[in-house]
Amino acid sequence: MDHTDFKKALRELCERRPDFRKKLAAEVRTVREASIHDDYMSWQALHKLTDRAPQILELLAEKGEDLEDWQETKVQLAAEYLDAVYDSLAYGPD
Image 1 (cartoon, rainbow, N blue to C red):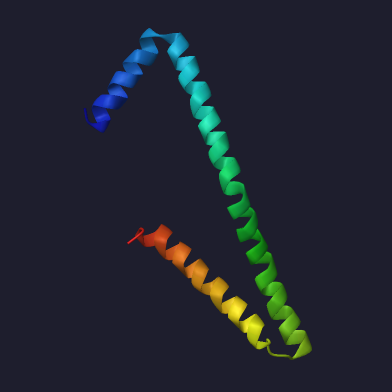
Image 2 (image 1 turned 135 degrees about the horizontal axis):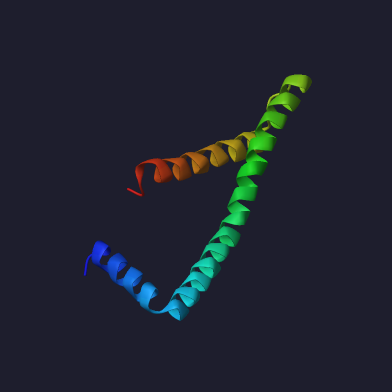
């Protein structure tokens, strides 16, 4: 059974059995809510990055200082990790 056949069979089952449709809809909602909750921490971290990066640049410009070695290492690692996530999302895991 390919994807199209499966969708058709599922649609027919939902039409014949309203109770099944309600249970399926509830299950889909539960899975979707769990997925949103699982991604929440990633979304929160990404928002923090978009807030902090410009703030760090401003602080460096105001103080006229360079980052310490350990700070440069952390920034470089964060950039590499973000690049890896971006590349995976944009181009696939390979």
